[in-house]
Amino acid sequence: MTEKKTFIRPCTWIYLLLMALTFVTWFIGTQQFSGLQISLMVLGFALLKGQLIGDYFMGLKQVSGFWRWVITIWLLLVGSLIAFAFNIAA
Amino acid sequence: MNPMEKNKWPPGDLVIWIFIMAELLAFGVFFSVYAFTRANHVELFNTYQLTLDRNAALINTLALITSSYFVVRAVSAIRKDNSKRCFHWLLGALFMGVVFLAVKSMEYNHHFSHGVNLNTNTFYMFYLSLTVFHFLHVILGMIILSAVALKARAGGYSAQEHTGVETGASYWHMVDLVWMVLFPLVYVMR
Image (cartoon, rainbow over all chains, first blue to last red; front, side, top):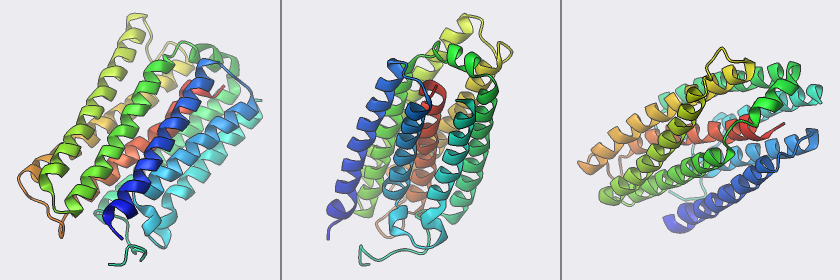
C-alpha cells in the first residue's frame, strides 16, 4: 500500500472531522447552552478529537505497547476528573 | 516495512515523548484544578466566561488543527524524500502558528485594555494563566518547527533519516491536542 493510502488519506478525513467537531463545539458555545449533559457532550467531543490526533496525526495507531495508550490514558484521566468536577457543580 | 506492522516506539526521538508526558501531566493538573475550582464558583465562572471571544477561539482552534495537518503532510513529504515539499508544508504550519499568536494577542489586548489582569477574579486568573501557559508552548513549538524547517531546507533530512522532523511534529501535535481540551473547557462548557 502507498503512503498516500495508508497515511495521508486517513489523516485528511480526520482533519475534516476535527474541523466539523470544532464547528459543533463553537456553535454550542455561541448559543450559550448550559447544563451537565451539554457539558459532558462537549467534553466527549474534545476527548474524541484528542484521541484522533493521537492515533492518526501522532501516529500512535501504528505503535504497540505502552506508547500506544499514553494519550488515551491521559484523556481518560483528565476527562474523568473534569466530568466529576462538573457533576458535583451541577 | 509492512504498513500494517506495529512499531515498538512512537515516531521521533523518545526523549521528546518523555517531555510530552511531562507537559501533558502539567496541563492535566491545570485543567483539573480549573474544573474543581469552578465547582465552588459556578456563577462567577459562568458569568465571566461570557466575556470571552468564542469566535477568536474558533479561529485559533481551526488554525491549530490546520497547522497540525500541514505538519502531517511535511512528515509524509520527507518520508518520500522530498525535502523541498517538507519545508513548504512546515512553512505553512508556522504561518498558522503565527495566526494563532496574532489572534490570541488581540484577545489579550482587548482584555488588558478593559483592565483585566490576574487579580481581577478567580476566573480571569485561570483564563489568563492557562492560556498564557499554552501560548508559551505554541512559541516553543514554533521555535522547534523553525529549526526543523531550516534543516529540511538545507537537505538535512532524507527518507531514511528524518527523526528530527517526526520529533518536532510530535511536539507540535501535543500543543494542538492540549488546545482541543482547553478550548471547550474554558470557552464553552458551563
